[in-house]
Amino acid sequence: MTPVTTRNRQATALTLACLCAAALAGCNNKSPEAGRPNTAPPQSSATTNTTASTPSSAGSTPPSTPTDAPTRPALAAGSTLAAGEAFIGYYVDLLNYAYSTGDAELLLAESDKGCVGCKGIAGYVRKINAKNGGLQGDFKDRLIDVKEIYRGKSGHLGGSASLKSGTFQERATPGASPVPQPAGTGTMEFTLSPSAGNWVMYEMQINE
Image (spheres, rainbow, N blue to C red):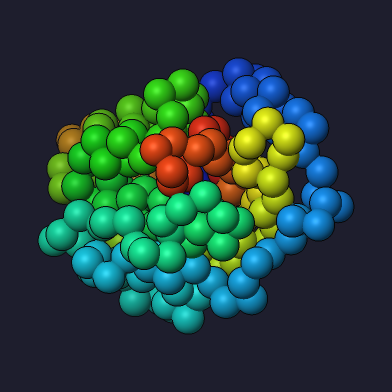
């Protein structure tokens, strides 16, 4: 997926891979708790105007810029597999809010302090976002499906999710010429860790 791959270049891939491998040591996707706990996609935050976690929204109409920050939905509260799956939908909403506003603080607040991929995205949106004209068009990610989610012996959750975005334009700096980015799909590889009774993003990487 070209759009998310462009954003993902801000993260350090080798460090990311090492962290994910360490976090999921002992994970077994054949365990009784493995698999998708729900067949329906996670619900998006009720207070955001984005539709990132709703597969039916993946049309050609650019989504509107959110006016309110996303808040964690009730389904994403707790430390169950179902809560972990719902958290992914919430996290995609946070990504889209950051892409729109350039504000990465909420994204980082729901991420582990050592999350390399999260910091990479945060650095990207602070420079390139819709608010400063760096992103224009249908740039938001939509969560199509949480393909797998499983619990590891280390207490983390691992898994992957399918994302989709539309066509948009990207400017590296406010005065730069826009670079067209085609629509596409990608895969988010994620690791979640428990924090204060809820899941947070421990590490993530979005691949083409």
